[in-house]
Length: 79
Image (tube, rainbow, N blue to C red):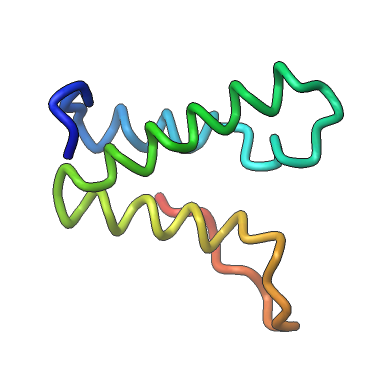
């Protein structure tokens, strides 16, 4: 994990993941896209903080995976 990445609790991380704009890549507004992309990279970097952070990140990614080609229902949002 980068030295510039702030250590945050799982609760704080969950809140950050939950409020992240997972659909930023569909925005026509370059500012919204850049903000979402930057925030996404930060969230990905924070996931390296611990196995629990990684699991939480992967759960949110799976829940919001709009590119999935499977017809199975998407996983629930991590609690």
